[in-house]
Figure (cartoon, rainbow, N blue to C red):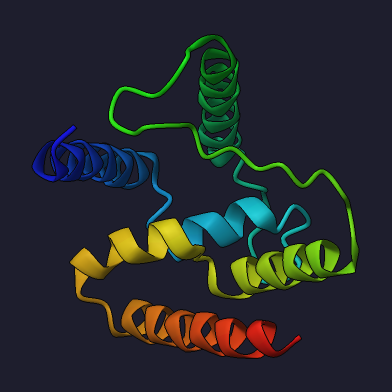
Length: 147
């Protein structure tokens, strides 16, 4: 498999992902916060916005089908082997990371994938979020290597 073909497949997958995020409203932090705030206590809305539940349900369905397909195929089309997680432990770093992710998502209305796609909007808060995310990733990489 040539590197160019692998890069083209990755670009196509990324563009499809970004388009799906845009069409679904996941690039709009206010919409995401409206979904996460089920009581309306934080942003003053009276009604919860359930529309993103369909987006999340669709994403989980597609991911589940992908994992089921990966178990049946000998190898992926554009790579020598599948890169599936092997660790199944629920430990303190996993719980802490999930909590940090959830708090950040709720406060900002952005998570990593939609934030990168939302850079195309040119919004300064999105650029600040992505910059902070990259600094956090580099800091984690540096400190995790010491542990």
